[in-house]
Image (cartoon, rainbow, N blue to C red; front, side, top):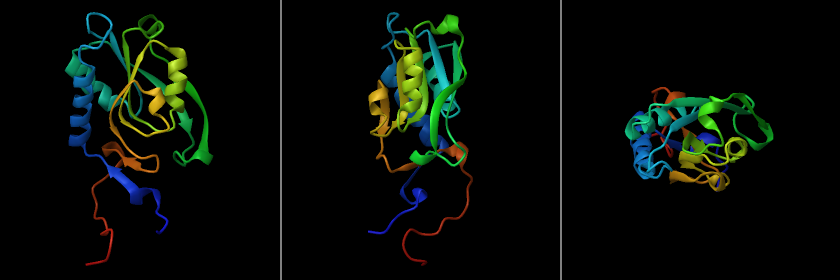
Length: 172
């Protein structure tokens, strides 16, 4: 077996796919909130959680939407030797959040789980949901749609542009 670059074991997500998967996540969360099945707020983990959170808030008719901004990677990406301690850059409205009861915290992906671990410490009673989950991060997620292997690199549509790609094998 040959060594692969991260993009060679990639999972490419289109805008249509993230929309369908986010709606599927909303359907899974529908009626599961603590207030007769309703959720009082949706909080997106920026930046990746913003598109799924918008879709989920729309599907579940949740009008209170906020963000939490957490940084945990250097610009080199998510490689283990390039990770740093996660820290909150911007917190959601404290009055809305409380201990997290009735709040859906949404992200696109849980990888190592460090970001969600930090946010869970702040809001222990929130419900944490991601569209995609890797095995190391799964313990930090209450609900997710699709599991992928730890060594899979997910390419989200907001990170890509359309261009020609060489075939995986051969040049024909």
